[in-house]
Length: 248
Image 1 (cartoon, rainbow, N blue to C red):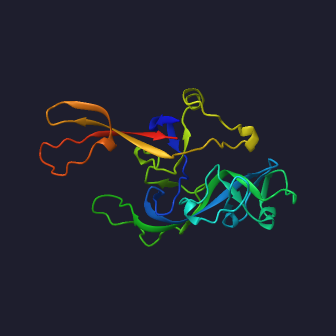
Image 2 (tube, rainbow, N blue to C red):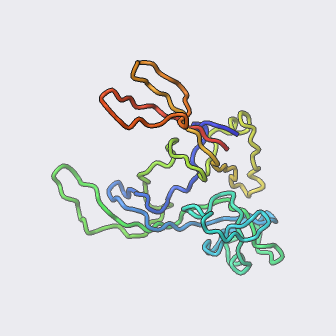
Image 3 (cartoon, one colour):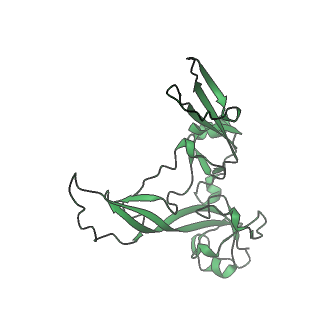
């Protein structure tokens, strides 16, 4: 299935390690750690929020643990992944729908991931005006922030359509485009306890460029792989405008 980047948005978690954030419109910090709550759906349609997500492992569709750690993304878990744990860890979870059943294997699908705590290294604060020193510079905020309650703004924009990479998870902006134009089969939210599991993974990208040539002509919709950079830049150099297509 092929679609343009204008039809989807990134479904990556908002807070990632090394991102810069702005707090109270004044403090700039860099995220050092990000802790998430992970909700999984088991084979009997029950929903449980794991007490300790660190005891989850990626799994095959059959529930066998995957030991290849290179498969983890920076935020470790994303919607749609199969995971497995041990029954004692599952039993201590917070049950959102249903209750613990020892006869059900501790293998499920991630339906929701939410950032609950950030550990931040504060690096700068905003000046009040030209020539004015920072106010109470040493009265920094606590190193731990809670995104649900604290006014935190991410300074990098992950929804930039030029930032799509293989492995990114995305959602369609328009459901009619998702099901009509591209014929996608959506998962029923009722089967996932109300959570939206319709997340797609980028498996390839294709860059299209428009080029203004030095003779005044313009070429439209060229594939970037058919071009190469001309490194001897001079005063007649022109810069192309790029757009991105994504292949699913």
